[in-house]
Image (cartoon, rainbow, N blue to C red; front, side, top):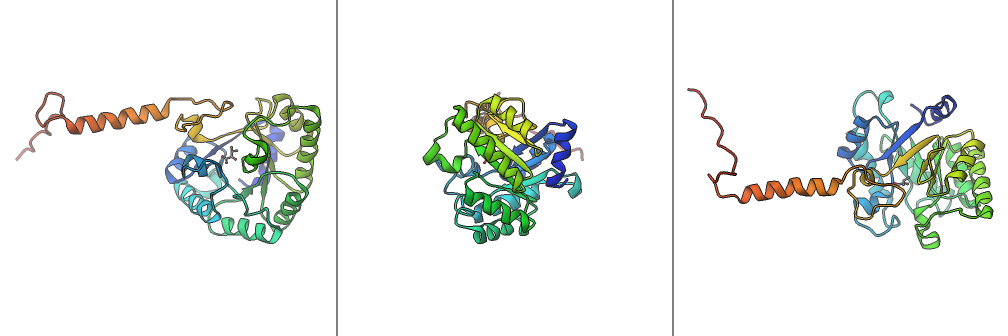
Length: 272
Ligand code: KIV
């Protein structure tokens, strides 16, 4: 599958699914789950690297994680989910040259086929235009954009009519400048629905209601592994608790005195 093929999903009404992965183990699980796209999101800065925001993750770290994700995928390339990698903070905000070098580095040295970047300010739109013209597919990201946390916080975006009109205009600009899909994060459902209807490219929502062309989730949130669960992405299972209990069981079993009734029976003696 190529990034541009996603438009066919939208046209045929097939819901697009995208899940994050951060290493070979999680990528193999996401592929086994049947997701269409794997996102190496910069949320890994918080989920995996323990940072308080997504800002500190570097291009080198994103590359290393993307390479691990690609190694975790199996089977013929055309049957694998499409890998999209987030451009980290400051890898594309300082101008087109740097952005092409950063995105090119990711695509050249991993199996990722596209990059995602946040925002639609005029400078960002210029960067997107340049990347697309250089053959680098770009997924846009509007609404709650975590790299702008110090300006926007983590609250729901575009609540009033004026900011909704702005977001609609920005979404149209991203499409006009060549984005092949758009992530809409934590915005009112009726706005996401309007954007979906206005655009030809697929709108992939998270905390944006059901009327989107696709949905994306941070896998660690769905699996109940993250300490701070976003309100718009509830856990499917209490994963952290289940895993801790399994490990506690193992630790406790090791501490049982040998031969005690609860310790494992010895293996049968081999036949001679
Ligand atoms: O970094 C990430 O995981 C993301 C998703 C929340 C869409 O951008």
